Length: 142
Picture (cartoon, rainbow, N blue to C red):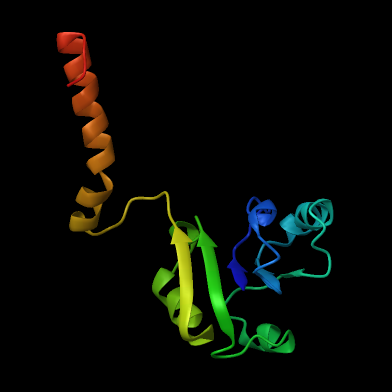
């Protein structure tokens, strides 16, 4: 498994290492190295979590660690794509690294540039606002 952009390591405690044999954290910001190392140690993942200080596009660095085209079962990407300059380029690299049938798991908190996607993203907010308006108007929710 590759964790793309682990940042300060907020997901490290969530890995079920009985189901994962190895996690590679690919993070270009070296300032997170000490914090990630502390979380890896705290969670007893020293032999199963390896931080690689590089970008996903640094194929030579990844290759040195054994990460090559078609070698990954899973890529985890939590709140990363909204912060990269070229998400399309990042995704091209991710797809290259995944095995056929591999999984790309992601979650984003930013709004899409697609109007249709933004409308879908906004449904929970609109439901909340309607409920709030109903409660303020009638003193109850339907």
